[in-house]
Length: 491
Ligand code: SAH
Figure: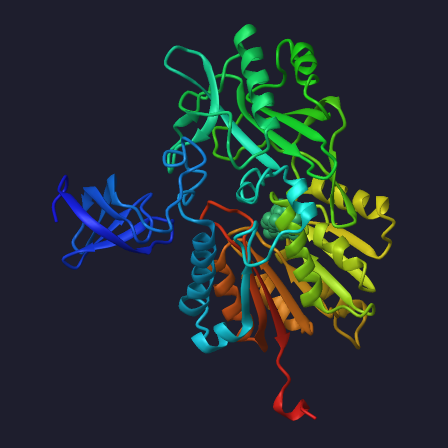
């Protein structure tokens, strides 16, 4: 196969990044935006020895699983990878991806995986689990097919400048930092567009510059928008390369015309880095947080705190966490990587005591306030790295309680994509909780960590993928591990 060669190929499989995979005389081609079952014409862009990458030129015969994209930028934008794939197929693909990682990286056998893994929890009418009427109304959906769009409660838009020197905002094109101007993301809420257009017109009027990554100059870097699906409250946080925005009072006035504006803040980030937010933030107007509910629990969310982006699916995920923990009311529970205490407070309703650990201090402030405003008194939160706080607690406990070791009945972990530090896994194994509930947004690191824990006395009991991010290749997974009963302990 040569570069620039034009080939006809039928797509037979899907790759880790959602791309179509086809074969021409045994040679494998990866073709972005092609869907399994498509017959396409494609141009070879890069040819290696046994595989290559080709660009989709024309769909000769569309797959039965191909659907029209909702967004005009679906192929260019790095946000969605599989918007043209029927939702039901997206779910099957994600379920398979999780299972493959469990097998390939985790070393679990197919039979065990098939036995423990329950069907993926999807969104919308074509999903395995049907949404409730309330969920439909909540997402503002007009029809069943609408439900898998507009699901995100959070958006972070970068700012840039077009060729004419005008400020623009939108999304990065796949694998680049080139901004595609688009204020109407199909995954977000309609209010995003109103807010973005307001900020752009303010910037034009007062000649406020966008940040330029290459030179490190310019003021406005990003805007973070959050929306409380149940409360309707809106938060806008502008990330700036400076300490203040000129004419900020006018910007505030303009943003205040958006209904339910609740919090307007700035976060200073003057570093040349890919990290979006600064370390601190300052209130320009209104509150330093918005409020939202998951189930019957009320949460305060600040700009720097993590909060799950898909509230409809989050409620199902936390419901599973609660079910997997099987609490009777007598348990001591640790919730590691607890964020604003979302899972902790869910579990506190059924446990004796819940301890939460989280690295972001503002999130822990939220967590403590959240416990208080929900009248929950059996939680305690610690700021720090989970892999430091838990081992330290474990060691110190042994010193003060010589005859017993620190005890936990259930340990929940919900780490970022890189998974758990081995120092943490080691301490968890030493503490010997009856159950471990692992919530993961990366099934590869999940599989790696499960392999470790299953080598230290645990076994896979139950698991389920939850689709928090329709139209993207990302998938959330929840797993329950139980401590193996030793032969000599069996009745
Ligand atoms: N369980 C929460 C948050 C999960 S996201 C929820 O469902 O909302 C992962 C969280 O881990 C983030 O809040 C992040 O700030 C935090 N975090 C990242 N690295 C950490 C570490 N080493 N120790 C503790 N928390 C960490």
